[in-house]
Image (cartoon, rainbow over all chains, first blue to last red; front, top):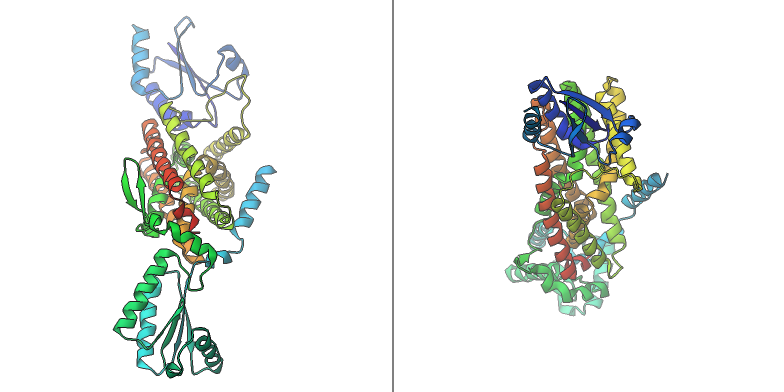
Length: 88
Length: 397
């Protein structure tokens, strides 16, 4: 699975709350690939996924289809549940 | 440019003349002789009373000086002192009364008068403004709040008031968010020296800016004290900020600048906040020398605190308004604001030092921020109601 993270330099939720969570997820689930996009710089992604809140996390299947999207702060537990569900 | 003008305007208020704070003093005119033992006893008595009643002003006149003898003669005339009492010391004039000598009875009498005038905000030279406030005096001592019962407001020492407000304000969600953001970026570098110096600079400058703004509020409120409905406006604003925080708690708003709806125009404040946060992120991550980073972080701290002030306006507003009811000396006002700032900064220093040692941002969680908003919201709502239902607190400025 692949996770697209749309974040911004000015976003407190991304820096304070979500960054440490994603670091732990990367360590614990090395098979999950992650791509980080900057809301202010990556216009294409912003338009493609119709982003209206930062941070936005889009969970994609191996074939690239959007499975789920989450905004704002999400807990590590919730992310693990999503990964486990979609991996089955 | 607009922002700079606002900043300069607030600065000018900060350094404005404070002479109007001298109103509502208890003035005592005390004539004494340096060689008389009763005079010495009375001088000691006043020395003890003044720290307890900061509004007490004792004009001490040594009658061995000629100009004071002339002054005393004027007092004899104005107070209809009988000729038999001429030349006797000590002689004390308070309000429309005078006391010759100093013994236990006079001491008790003076003490009760000073206590009474202090409570009633009554000046010996009675002015109309003070008289008008007397009606609200009994209400000033105690406030009845629905569901909470009676609260004795006048009994709260200004030190305790400043500590509580400073401590609670230090945990305001906006101030916390800015500090946590910078620390989160700095922690990522793993450089403890940078965390301490850059984070410390941020906290220090935040404290200084906050001190300036609270002082400006204080001056502004005193300057505008002639506006009768000022307390009403303040109460409504404090209630507004309380309700806003409660709304944010209920609808779970943690980050107000994170929404980016396409069709909605973003406010100037949101844009500025984003710009400052992005700059903080850049400075925190960059490897520029600490000496270059310090002035940049100082400017950013000043900027973020100025903007955040609109976010956490409720606390400084309610605090300064209540502080003005204490009738303190100008220096005492500033000292109590410093107490407020000390506790405000202390909260942030604790967070800084935890980040420094653990290299983690603890104490700040989504739930924590929401709880802070709930507590602050309820607190501001109660304060707003206090200010609204009891004009006696505010009108004693």
